[in-house]
Length: 148
Image 1: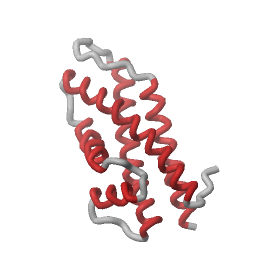
Image 2: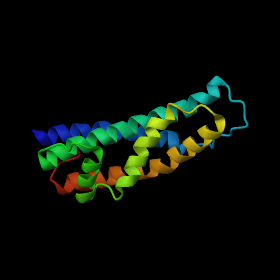
Image 3: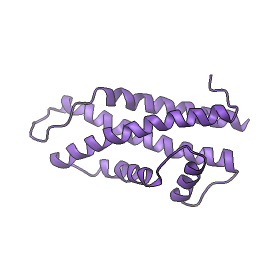
Image 4: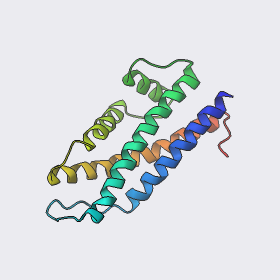
């Protein structure tokens, strides 16, 4: 029963990350000197939303996986990330703390120079999100959860 819940959470996570990957694959660096039209900015808005959504889904999945594997939920994100590191889902706790901060920063930046840096950082950090999906798949398969 519990494996069904974690499997459903994983499938939802994969859907969100698949959309992020589609946006990342189409990435064209943001030019702070270019006066973008609203239509041209839609891509960057979509990228931002998909990044934020993927981070939220991943952090939520981490909580569900922690409960599934450890029968409890940590009081802090750092403790949850320590558990994810212990079971080899993630390599670097600080990376995930940075991703969370970036997610929070996205909606509060409006200057073109800052937006370029934000978009570049989103793309760079997205690769680790994609890699984490593979690590989760491996973990779930080793735990006997059928991903099909």
